[in-house]
Length: 565
Ligand code: B12
Ligand code: SF4
Image 1 (cartoon, rainbow, N blue to C red):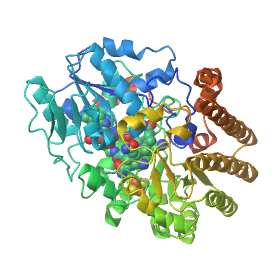
Image 2 (image 1 turned 180 degrees about the vertical axis):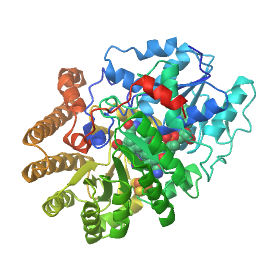
Image 3 (image 1 turned 90 degrees about the vertical axis):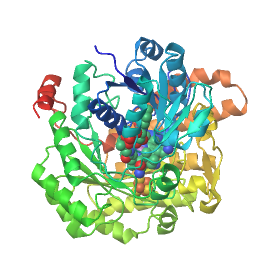
Image 4 (image 1 turned 135 degrees about the horizontal axis):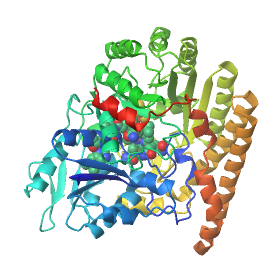
């Protein structure tokens, strides 16, 4: 097997999750990942494809998936066996802060001469603090690192100081840290994310290595994929670290950069060659304007993908537009996030629309053939009290009364309020109290025994304990509501009730252990805590769309498809 020039490693959220007793809570209940957050950033695939086009060999190793799939898998042994002049680790999501640094230490222990680069939004935000860890040689900042990384590779291989590599912070031979300007922020994305899905399949075949490329533990059973429409965002949701303001201030992006409708449609086509699983087109397709959205829908209707498409709306849409969605993507699924039933709370979050507009959109989507509208609410918002959370659940009941094929979901903002978000940067202004700010503090918080102690915030209206208690109460009530409406089966509702009640019991046990300082008792409850952590919650189960039996094409067929293009 050829030696790679760069190995990209995706860490588990917490490195030693298999030995520690930690109650993770519902943070990953509404995404396909487990609480170990094993999904690697899509940017890995884009970086790999771009660098290979420039003549470098790049390999992806998803350590988190390997560790989840096999309890005896020895991550350190694998890292030791790897050979490459450069290793990259993502610290895109802050909740990988523990795993990323521990993996960095292991890499340097076994490969002291290799160079180590970190990247991703959280690495960009915390780059200065990252240099407190002596293992880290480079941090590549910003949302677009393909070209800067190519330049850095060239410098490393030719043993040149990377003084002119944009977006790079680096440590020189004497240990001094330098900050190059964050100047590479492209407005066009035509040269990146080109055929990167095909490229990923090619790498799987070349390295005979499906295990390390899997984006999720359960991916072979439920091969959901995502297609990005842009980098950045037009919206300003107060709690989001990927908002327009966060991108401007923390990542130097003035305006979002959009992929062309043709590139997005191409991704849908190439994914269709690989799998029949659902495809999530990320971001409201109207962000770049109505013309863009109509062009994309036109291309999708020509494409006639066999995969079910999941589309997203950031705000309500008129019936005419929803009908176009239905014509272009028959049996599509729609996602919208009003955050709260209370328009005052919604407005405080930075979303400005009424419940009437929301309901008119749901009705329009269902009339247009949408098979399911998923409506997402959150806990831990500005102006939101515990009572307001329960009122949101009552509102979910009224949505279920009014509409078939509509699924409301609720989750707490957890474990972290995003760094870079308006609320994180100006907590008092939005009614937040930040309990943790720095990178090392977040790393330590991640290994606290329950998510109550990991939460990095509370609000003027809810303490940390109230956020946790409201979350479990809301989940219990919503589960019962759905069972009463027949939108989930009796068995599913019963299993979820048991799961939530066990989680509450474990939360109280952990509180007692912590308050009495008897941490040595934590291992006694590990088996139960792990069962709660790893059992699939009702929300995740419900969000899974039914898939046809042939979900993933055999690798040999995939290879010929990729080569034959
Ligand atoms: C798409 C998306 C998702 C997708 C992820 C798809 C994927 N596999 O990447 C889904 C819906 C699954 C998702 C889930 C989550 N997300 Co999200 N997501 C986004 C979103 C909307 C866009 C991200 C994007 O477009 N990236 C563009 C692609 C091309 O680039 P990229 O993957 O980021 O990689 C580039 C750079 O980051 C960098 N890079 C990344 N890694 C590395 C590594 C190295 C070595 C180098 C050099 C460079 C580098 O270079 C890449 C190429 O240029 C942003 C919001 C926003 N407007 O940006 C939130 C956002 C990134 N997500 C966020 C969060 C919190 C989450 C969750 C933790 C939420 C949760 N509790 O469930 C989970 C984590 C999932 C997991 N790991 O298992 C926060 C992150 C805040 C923070 N700093 O921690 C954001 C900012 C906003 C938000 N709240 O949604 N998310
Ligand atoms: S949460 Fe709001 S600001 Fe963040 S990516 Fe979604 S729409 Fe944009």
